[in-house]
Image (cartoon, rainbow, N blue to C red; front, side, top):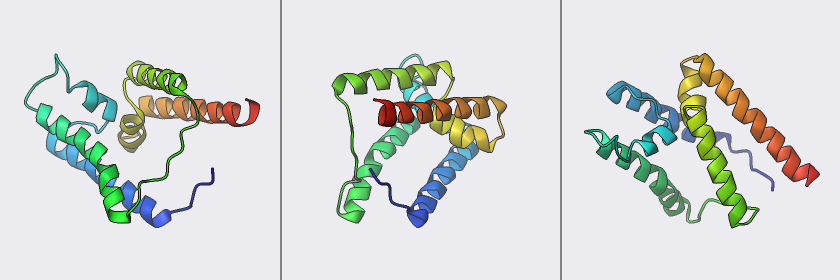
Length: 141
């Protein structure tokens, strides 16, 4: 699959993600890590910030609908693999997020911008794993 080079759209998207991360840190003192926000939507974490977390997750989901409304088409997506592979991948990503105490958005966007050494190690680990996995699945299997 060939990916188009879209510097303008990517810059706008990156700016929006960065702005949302800054806004969440400035208003709530929280890092915009999707896994941390999602897991705190369930007990025992129900508190006065629960509505904000729910709205954040709804925004993540609704963004694809907004994209389709603006462009007139759904974002192109290709999933290669069956249901069992997707379940295994989801469990591995979930385990990695818990084990690494954060996800790609928390470590990659917020952690690196704060120069967190733990986030540098986490990003280096998941990027290396992703590169090796992509190489194995695309060239050796």
